[in-house]
Image (cartoon, rainbow, N blue to C red; front, side):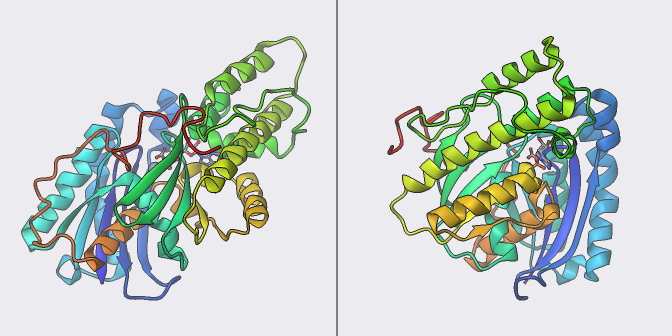
Length: 353
Ligand code: KG4
Ligand code: ZN
């Protein structure tokens, strides 16, 4: 089952072809990602209008390359999926409209995919992970724990009440004058630092509930940078990273303990999952909880087309959509929660302690 997936919700123009009929490890036939690093560095972040224009320029060559590398043509495909939200709406419109036009021209099923669902199902692309499992989604825009019961069946357990953890990495990097994207820059610098040298508060550690918070830590980091204690940048980076992950692990442990369903695994997704220190900490947590831990390879942690193709394949396998044209009128959305029933944040104490 061949699916083309298109992703354009932030600053990556990406396309991939996945063959769901193949065994784990052999399913990705191509995975082309064009990252707008130059523009992000130039403007110090993602500028939605600049990003949307770059998507318009890149989408054609990126899709062509994905098809060519996979050695397939549009006619061979069983479906065409695209991120239809959430994300920067200009970019989402570019990718979704492009995919719809391809699908309409070839009379192939179009699948409107939620970007977060793409991240959530990625572990099943690369490993044998039955439902239900606990997902830790850590990216630039999201910081959530989600109970994944099935395709389209998600229950949010915890979420951030302010910043996402990737955002905290990016802001820390910016305050320290490091290159964007901030996550890899902070991780690289932290490798040379002493992670106990700078005293920083561990957000929400030991607090009841399962929510996250990172804005207080950001303020503490700013004080450490601007203060007169003469902290070395590598020590600030290492201390920030240790404390941020301690909080993340503490909240994830509480989320896992609040769930009665027998979980098959703890899986991590989103850009921050590329961090080696975090994956080591998660493996430790998995051992403690007796849970298998799945960390997708680096190239599948950050935004990519393969995760969108795979989510489309999972839906096709369930017989969705019933008619190839059924989702052509799904409108691109800037916001699209995985769990529409979840309260804005679960609030301290809302989940089981
Ligand atoms: O999932 P993603 O590619 O895009 C979305 O936000 O949807 O995640 C990007 C985020 C950025 O905030 C980036 O700084 C962070 O993931 N990131 C990292 C690392 N690599 C990327 N954070 C910490 N350590 C890393 N190695
Ligand atoms: Zn993402």
